Length: 325
Ligand code: ACO
Image (cartoon, rainbow, N blue to C red):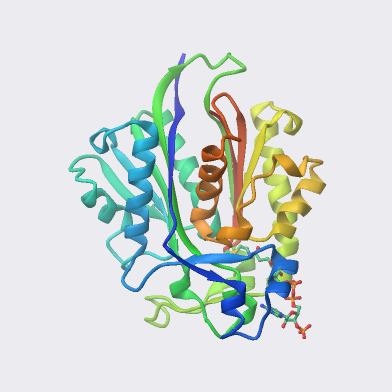
């Protein structure tokens, strides 16, 4: 027997305001047909004035606690993946901890841009395996609209705001049981050589400004398909599970063409790939839990299912996580 991380629940929150491609094309030189054809995106949610990343994260956390049927006081660790924190410090996770009324345990942020949620799941799983935490709230939350250059059509059409959260709990399991539940394996990578293909042109120590997202999209695209495919294969191989046995694939929602490219490369049935690109656009660290929540609520992802999460983002960073519900 060994202590492993069991999935307990998922939550989500999307800001009320929806910005359609049609509406966006009135202020930026673009069109609904260009955006749909190149990305699959139809709309994105945008946080209201004064609505912050911690507001979105808090709402997603409450929704996850409800799904898990747990009280906030049971949580002893909060890991928040975000690129758009409320403040340079303190960590946004501590703001959520405070709002949840949690006065014990620890809370901190991690930064791996769009791969942040996968990194956070890896960390949560490691903390549980080493018996450093019992019930971990993992949040991916972003107000990416705040770091977009709304005059750069190459980037501003791609992103949206939102938050998603998972809860994992420590449980003694029989490791030899091939049908055992929980986090089966995680895989993360980064390669800092590619910083200039996807980055933000500001920060506290360089410009003392927040900066805007800059990206050479077509080059990011090529790396994304190759690296995501390799990450998923490695993650599955290390767990001793063939990719063909996985029930659902929940990818980072950057672009429908990337999702299709990866599915083709790994010979995955596109119907097993959860896509919310059309409605949410790219919500960075929030995209994986948001897509997962969508498919759980509509009844596709069920207890017992084998699910592969994956993401790719700035850094470059990338990774995958294999979980049985
Ligand atoms: N509307 C109309 N035309 C546009 C737009 C737009 N919104 N954006 C760019 N164009 C134009 C360009 O100016 C260019 O015009 P030109 O030929 O006259 O110079 C033309 O469209 C083609 O531009 P490309 O960049 O080559 O277009 P591409 O087919 O590669 O699509 C896109 C661009 C959608 C950005 C794509 O490359 C992509 O999705 N890349 C990956 C993005 C991604 O995955 N990011 C990763 C995660 S993000 C994160 O980590 C923060």
